[in-house]
Image (cartoon, rainbow, N blue to C red; front, side, top):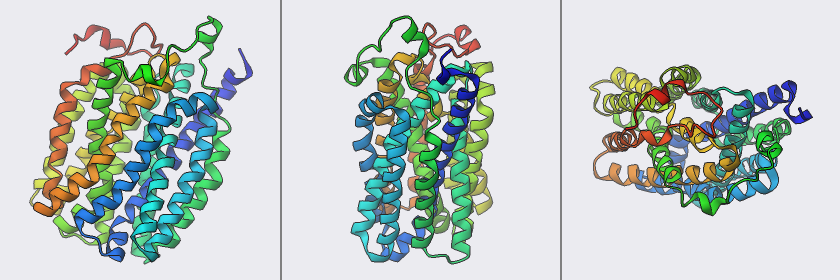
Length: 408
C-alpha cells in the first residue's frame, strides 16, 4: 500500500473532495441568488438576461473539452487549484460589472464558467478515484456536498437581499473565500492513477478523442444533458419565475430557489442507499417522473404554496441524474478522465441552451410557462436511462440489483 492510498490519505481525500464540491456550489449559488438584482441594476429584459447568462455556458463549454487532457496532464488537484482562482477572478469581475455595465459582467461570467467547467470535471474525476478506493457508492454524496454549498449560497444570498447588501460587495467577498480555501483542500487529493491497473501493468486505453466515439459514453452524455438542463434551468430561473410569475417578494423568491436546492441536497445524500438497493436504472427512471410532476406543479400551480411544493419535487427528482452519469463515466478507472470530460461536455450543452431557450420562450409567453420545456427533456432521460447501467467487468462499486434487472 503506497502512502497515497493509506486509510488516512483516503479519508483526507474524501474530505477534500467534499470541500471542492461544497466550494463550487457555494460560489455558483451566490451568483445565482443575485441574478434578479443584477437584472434590475442593468435593466435587462428576459431575452437579454438569457444572453448574459449564456456567457457562463460559453466559458464552460470551452473549458470542458480541454479539461480531460488537462486533468490527465497535471492531475485533478492542480486543475482544481488553478480553476478556483480563475472562478474567483471571474466572480469579482462580474461583481464590479454589476456597477459598471453589461460588458464586464459578460467577461466575468465567461471566466466564471471557464473555471467552473474545468473545476467540475477535475473534482468529478477525483470523486471517481475516491469512490473506487473506498469500494462503495459515494459520488451522489459528493454532489450532495455541491448542493449543500448551493443551499448555503442561496440562504446567504437571501440574507444579503433582505439586508440590502450591495451585489458587488457580496460577490467579491465570496470570491475571496473561494480563492483562499479551495486550493488548500485540493492539495489533499489522491493521485488520479488507479493502483490496481498500474500494478497490473495496464495503461489507460485511448484518449479523449476515443471517448467521443464510444456509443455508451455519448448516450450517457445525452442522459446527463437532460438532467443538467432541468437542474440548470432551476438554478437560473426559479427565483425569477417565482417573483415575476407567482408574484412573491424578492426574498421569498430566493427562498423558493433555496427550497429547490435543499430538496436536491436531501436526494443526493440519501440517494446512494436507493442506488445500492434497487440499481441505477430503476431509481433514475422513478425520479424522472417525480421531477416532471414537480415542474408541472411549479409552472401550473394556482398559488405560491403549490409552486413551493413543486420546487421540492423538482429538486428531489433531478438530484441523482448528474452524479449517476458521472459514476457511469468513471466505471472504468483507466478511462475516467476522458469519459467524464466527454459526458460533462455534452451535459454542459444544457447550460448553453438553457438560459437563451427559457429567455426567448419567456418573451413569447412568460418565463414561468417556458419552464414546461424541462419536463419534455426529463421524459427523454427516462427513455435512455438504461445507458447508465454499470460496466460490471470494470466497476468495483457494487450495484447489486442491476444484474437482475433486464435492460430497457
